[in-house]
Length: 221
Ligand SMILES: Nc1ncnc2c1ncn2[C@@H]1O[C@H](COP(=O)(O)OP(=O)(O)OP(=O)(O)O)[C@@H](O)[C@H]1O
Ligand SMILES: [Mg+2]
Image (cartoon, rainbow, N blue to C red):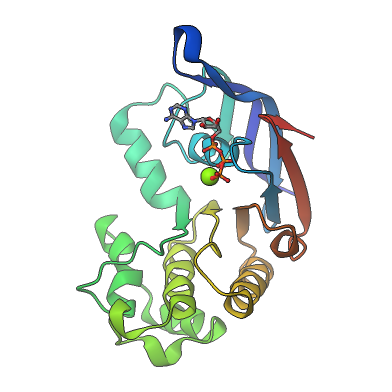
């Protein structure tokens, strides 16, 4: 299986002097194409720090991050923004949709920002897969939380990135919607051979993943 994302011995310390926090301690991980992996750990264990570093939004003090075989540290800002647009899909707890655009417009926006044109048939198929065809022309304010998060998942999937990074994607959802959303992420990973990395503190959500990684006090168990 092709390795799409890898980190080697990454460490990260925040702050300086007396108030230092070692958020990550020599973490090494490898993710293969089509894998749906969950990273679980208590609050403050380093989950978001790890995801930010894997997503090139932050840099480690030590170690290496490889995306599609390319080291993403020490790249120019221009190259990094291109990688973020094309190779990484982000899903956040708060959905992060643009309120003045419809679901469809939200989904195609990153593709257009990357100077490409969307394949309408593919977008419609993804909407169908996620069970939100009826939301296509709705604005975020007209959708439920679960529908908004499924729109955010569709947006990430339609970029066809090397990896989708989801930080607590079910954090704002009730139990029923949370289960549904994670089940759909698992289905999408299989159907589209899409690598998805989900951070959660909810062990039950992690059970849907192909692999569960536990992080405690900045170290992967
Ligand atoms: N920008 C920052 N400046 C200083 N300390 C930080 C910063 N970001 C995170 N930390 C600290 O690093 C540690 C790991 O934080 P992180 O956000 O990765 O945890 P988390 O596992 O995502 O927690 P949660 O489940 O609450 O989201 C914590 O002790 C946190 O206080
Ligand atoms: Mg976090």
